Length: 363
Image (cartoon, rainbow, N blue to C red; front, side):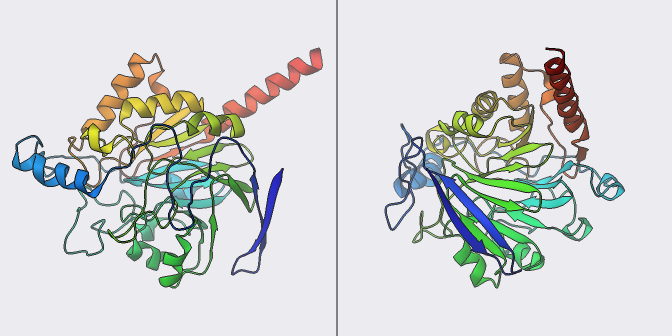
């Protein structure tokens, strides 16, 4: 049974949103708040937060890792962005902000170009590395994907700079925040709902996380990942998530997945972070369950949000990939500002399709 909804966005374009009834996900909304319905999930409390941030520091159980000593390389050569407007590519701006070009559509994921991920630019987690590519240096953005409402993923200053020119996709409830900032060119989706944009099909996928921009509005909005299907490439952006049973189901529904952008940072201490942030070994496991071709790590190396050293996640990722017997060339650990063509993946897919067609004809 397929549920169909029609939504009209501000440009006057009618888009079809569909969602299949599914047995995988129980309800994740109780009429007031969203929640994680997955087996084994244990919500962390405000008391747990105080234990990590205050008590463990007072008792010496929380190591203090300074963030000022890291020297991340920023790539300055961005010619590939302007050479061919139709070439599929990816660029890592920093944290969870990716620039993607698929079927000629310019996409940003969770764009944050501000100095701090905070309600105030005078205090709060500060950038260790500037944006790898300045917002003004990017091609005009057509589509913005928001995974949830936390400050390091939904940045007011950046959204105000982008304005209503792009089309925004956001999880249920986040539209109220966008509207309060004057953004009207958006659609909200629930898990498994799909929408068409130009030649793309975009799916709102489940994630295991939480939401809230202040202590009094916890889980009033949904959190999600996004699956983008183009004519040649399927790209999965997981947003923020702990390890959960959804990766196998996403693969079952939408394989093949060619590129998986998965979070690998903000994972220590594990007792506190495990439900909502994967560590690199868990991200490798998720990558294997997705059966994706290429892994692009995000959510690391930009803001100091947890206890692990800022430069630790990619090293642990490489070790975990090696232990799992995965080829290192499948792990694209991008530098800040690095632009990489996805054409080689598209060409492999096209060649494999031609080979299958040839074998079918011979039979």
